[in-house]
Length: 277
Image (cartoon, rainbow, N blue to C red; front, side, top):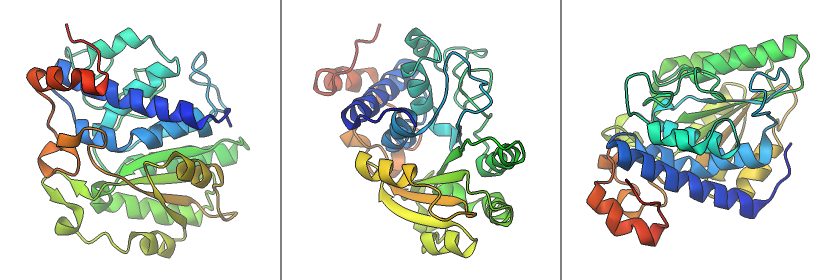
């Protein structure tokens, strides 16, 4: 595990949010609110939990991270630049052209990205293969997956959950970004996810509920996984969609909405945002 400095993690999460707002405004494109809800989770993983080497992205003993909710890739692009996988100037290319390294959903052509995602429901199945391979090779690494809560309406997740428990993949950690919103409505108005913790337990997983914006809770829950030997871990992180951008917080219409340049300029000084060209 990397050295833990909670203040540094908070600053990293703050920078993720600034980058997300800046990139999406510059491109006039992106799933801003879903990225903002995950900023603290992703900052905690990369600054306080995971082992990895930006100078050697394919290091065999690395911990792996899969962003199953691929539409939230703005946050992933920010953290990968902050920890040194590529220069921060590359963030300017987000969704700027057809062959950009930073498209609207992550692709493995970008250093640090472990899987192409965006078609929902595939991150957990992919992670199971990676976790099982690590077990077979006797590698002491972990695989982390961040999934959206609306994404759990995809049946592939629950098929995969059964397989993970069957193979005793205690090196697998699924984090649910439980912001209670999805495209078009609140999750419980679309499909009844609750009692979500009980569902994971019924599939043979160890589970915890945490505040997804509390760095201390995230560190404790993620660093102590697995909670039970021989069981995969599910961390249900309760978050606010659009966290950090007041006009977007907990708003259905902000799933795929970005600031106008006029809005950006009016908020720039207050939020400490960089100037747009």
